[in-house]
Image (cartoon, rainbow, N blue to C red; front, top):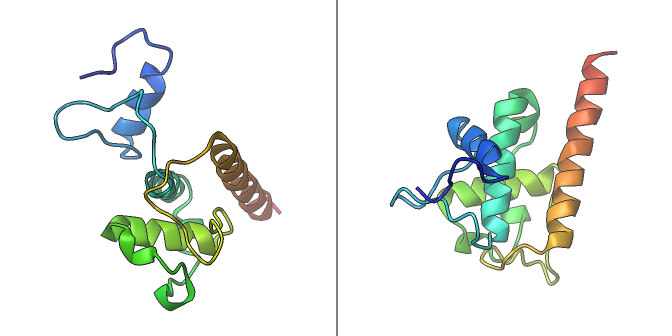
Length: 130
């Protein structure tokens, strides 16, 4: 593969792969230097959420009629992930009701989405502990 031991990201990628959060390209590569799309990020976030808090993951009802105009440009898994992430308040459109699944995620969006996911998990954890 292309994730060499000793690289600063190797442990994180190996953990995420072992926990079915991320997968490679089928040719035994991960592509650590490649950009990721908005759809890929939504999928990875929802895989993490499902592994971390299944109740929260299933807490929303999917309704593809009330979602992004371009949802059908997503893969089957992407449709579910994008819809679920949107309903949980983790992602938003790019304007005009479009998600733009094949556009590369910006650093700002990456930070925004991870912060929203972290806040969601923290709120859920606090509610469970009351």
